[in-house]
Amino acid sequence: MRYYKYVRMQDQVFVFRVHKAVQACKAMAILKYRSRWEDALDDAYFHIIKNFDDSKGSLEHYAMSIVSTIYLNKYSKEVGSETVLEIESERKAMESVRVSNPYDDLLDALEEEGTDYDEEIHQCIKYLLPLFIKDYEMFRSKDSSDRKMKYSGLFDMFSFKVISSAVKILADDYYDDAKYINTLSKNCHVKNFKEDRYKSSLDKTLSYISRIDDIVRCKAIGVKRKKYAYLIDIVDVLSKIFSMFYDKEGVAQREIDGVPIYCSLSGQILLSKDELFETLEREIVGTLLALRTNLKVLNYERGKELVVTSTRVYEPEVIIQMFQAGVHIPMKKLMIGRVIR
Image 1 (cartoon, helix red, strand yellow):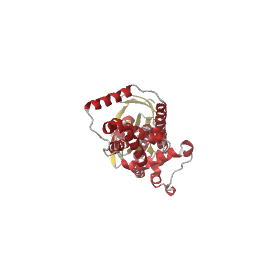
Image 2 (spheres, one colour):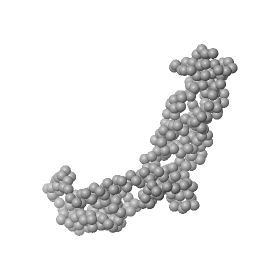
Image 3 (cartoon, one colour):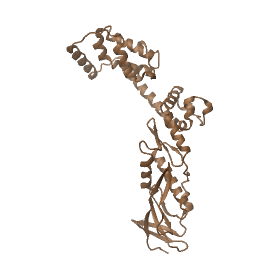
Image 4 (tube, helix red, strand yellow):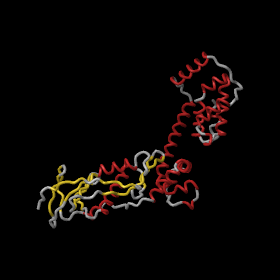
């Protein structure tokens, strides 16, 4: 197949992909066109370069269709089983023993270039994701009046060609996902609390010493009052919320180019599970303490557990509204041992 006859005519990566798709039809061309199989592949190859676009569907399927009909059976002949076996044997022999020639080196270089190019596009998409979630309308319309975000430095990191490809993929394939997550984030009503919100709810009458199973040891530091302790298991709560809203097909997540996109309870848009869990913890702890001002923080180990105190013998269950669902936050009652004074 005269690959280099056309290689300068269009984008090398696209040309190479067409070359591979047509070469995959070699056995079929030999069976259909016998001695004219190379001419058939060349003509099919040139036809695909001139006529293929995304509306044609899969490049491989399109190539198979063109190769099988390029001469409209003009050179087709019946082929016996012995000939078929001979062709297949030759094909397998060529696959097992690759003869080095100048064409091989350039094909390898083009294949490597295509891989690098795809990786660049993927990295560009990853970089653009936070911007795309907010600017999805601009990505589709290409109208600067729709722009909400800043893009300084983008063209210093990626070429125009890579950026153009990444924007097209995002706009064509992920517009609905971006619109969904962006709309969802605007309808979240939980407050985005700071990490140190719990400090404003610290217990000023007891000081935490340790906990062994369900028994808490404390030291009195203020006015003596009868207190009861409750445990909120942060790990269990986060796992429960993730399985409810963020697992596959969850209401608060979408996937764009293989990257999960999460919407937190306060509408924060996040690109990693770790970041999501950190944000959810702040939101849940902050909301819990804001809803129940009588609860005081005795001990807080971030990412692990929260121990609170109350003057109530039985503390009513806490329910937090999340994505139009009421989620119960379990509180396990602990025993406060003899208080050290």
